[in-house]
Length: 408
Image (tube, rainbow, N blue to C red; front, side):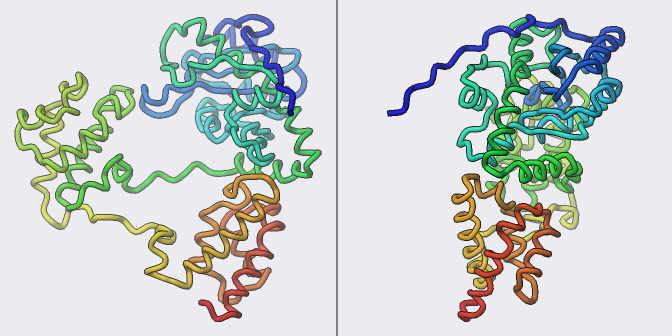
C-alpha cells in the first residue's frame, strides 16, 4: 500500500502580505528590486471575468529570489514596461499562460522566455493540472482556495484576497523547478520548450465576424427573423456593457436574448413577462431592448442573417460519415494513431497533436500520402517539430494502409 503523503497548508506568504503598489514611485521601487533579483520570475494576474467588460488585469503578482513578492495594481500603474525591461533576461513562470498573457501584454509586460507549469503538467501526464492541485501533488503544499472568481476590480481589495494573490506566486518557482526536473528525467524537456515558445509566439485571435452567434442557446432559434432578433439584442447589449464596463451577462443574460427571439415580444408588457428581463439591469434598458426587437422585425429579407456562416475548416466530425465517408475513415484512423501514441507517452491527445490539425489533414489530405507530405501538411497546420517526429510517420502509414486496402 502506498504511504499517504502529508500535505502542509500554505497559510501566509513568507514575508507577509506586501502592500499593493498603485503609483509611479512605488512601481519604481519594485522595478529596482526585481532588476537586482536573480533567477526565474513567477507572475500571475487577476481579472474580473464575469463582472467587467473585457479581460483586463486588475492585479499583477510577481515573485523573484532576492526581490520577494510584489502586488501591482495595473489600474494605478497601467504601464509595466519598465518592470518588463527589468526582468527581460529572466525566464517568466506562469500557470496557464495563455489565459494571462493577453492581459499582461495590455500593460506592457511581454515575456521573452517562459515556463508554463500547467502545460508542463499536461505533457507529464498529470490528470489534474489546476495550480492548487499541482502544488499539492508535486510539492505537498495546500494553497488557499476561494477567490479566483472574485471581482478583482473591487477597491480596496480585501486583505484575504491579497493573501490569496500573494500565495499564488509564493511557490510557483519551486513548482517550476520540480517539473523541470521531471521533464528532464522523462526526456520531454525539449518538447516543453517548443510548446512554451509556441504559446509565446501565437498571435492574438482574429475577432469573429459574427460574435453574436456564440450566444448560449442559439441552437434553439430556427428561423432567420428570430436570428435577427438575437443579433440586434446582442449588439445592443454589447454597446451598453462596453459603455458601463460591465460583463455583458450582467446587463442581460443570454437566456433572455434567446427567449425574446423565440417569443418575439412587441410591447414592453410582453417583454417584462419574460422572467430573464426582470433583473434590475435589464429593466433599466427596456426601451433599448424593444428598439432592438423592432429593428429586427423591420429588416428587409435581404438583410436577415443566414442560419449559419461557412467556416474556413471542415464540418463537424459527426457529419463526415454522410458528407464524405472516406474522410470519416481517415479521421478515425488518424485519431486511433494519436490516441495510442498519447497513451504511450502519458499525455492528453490534444497535447500530442492539435485536434484541429488532425481534422484538417484528414478532410483535405495531400494528393499523395507520404511521410514527407503528411509532415509538411501538419507543419503548415501548426504542429511542432517534436509532435511531427512522433506522429507524422504513423499517421501517414495508417492513411496509406487505408488507400492500399481500397477502403476509401
